[in-house]
Image (tube, rainbow, N blue to C red; front, side):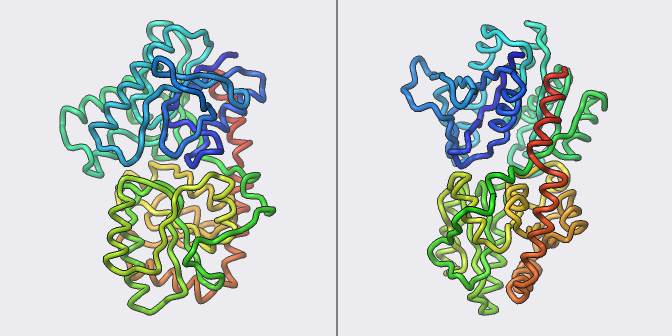
Amino acid sequence: MKVLYFHQHFSTPKGSAGIRSYEMAQRLIKYGHQVTMVCGSYGGGETGLSHEFKGGRREGEVEGIYIVEFDLAYSNKDGFVKRAGTFLKFALKSIGIAFTYKYDVVFATTTPLTAGIPGIFARWLRFKPFVFEVRDLWPELPKEMGVIKNPIILAAMSALEWCSYRSAHRCIGLSPGIVDGIKKRGVKASKVEIVPNGCDLSIFANDVVPWRPVGVSENDLMAVFTGTHGMANGLDAALDAAIELKKRNRKDIKLVFVGQGKLKEQLQKRAKEEQLDNVIFHPPVNKAKLAELMKAADIGMQLLANVPAFYYGTSPNKFFDYISAGLPVLNNYPGWLAGMIKEHKCGYSIEPENPQAFADTLEHAADNKADLPEMGQRAQQLAKQEFNRHNLADKWVTWVTGV
């Protein structure tokens, strides 16, 4: 079967972005299917293509995946207007691919929501089976965050969301809240399946060489955050906790932030102004280097802004990386992940916007380091039993090709 796969932010493991689409494409190939991946040029991502763009695109085979990459640079640092323009350009160029390429199934994954546009055209004008994967609920999330307030834009996004869901023969949601959100738009339960982000245990194997950034000693408690430094992540909450720890003279606790994003410079400026020498920022790293860092860490910080839509409506890659690496998780918002952490006793779940509780938890971890390895073992057991990416990928392939 020939699968046409649209993911604007695609990356192989050589990049520092999420690799869900790479893993799913590899699983399709394992079962004898052919995959054409259509993407843009994502900051931090790595498609595997290195030759020059011609006519605004380049293409070629990378590890069995045929990749079509448009010369559409995108970064989390871009402003709203620039990002919206890039999203629309990608959608328009993708429609051309959907009209001209030969394929049996078209698959599209968010974000952005505009990724569904070529699937809509393929469904109604080429009568192709269309499967739509939803990673975040739009426009609910940006509306609750206050990122988008224009009622016309919100109405247009709501219409596109409805059209994408109702055009798809099947949908995939990455969390319970996303699945419920799709159903609320009138999609039958029989057409929706949950396939959360998974754990690639092979990447976080035991035979890696651990390392710590400059400024973190071997005796420090190292709590790491790995991911985008943006509005959704609410990283000021961690800096608030760092201030509290400094007041308590806890020099043995370091907060390490690895990644990039629109607010990174602002966060760095704040840390410098407030002389937070217990906060360290590090550039993004690829998965192999990330595994080595996590091997040396004590806790993984799963942080998001206090937005109710996040509680059950996200499936963050970093959480699954943490438990894959056998790291206890510190989570600062309620919801399905907080429930799992409590149930499996594999970390700490604190209430949002409470720097004292955040600092208390880190202090407790630092004072009880001997308990952390057992928490980490339970985290890794959860990864193996419920979120093994190979098992989830098999489920995903069956759902997509079975359409």
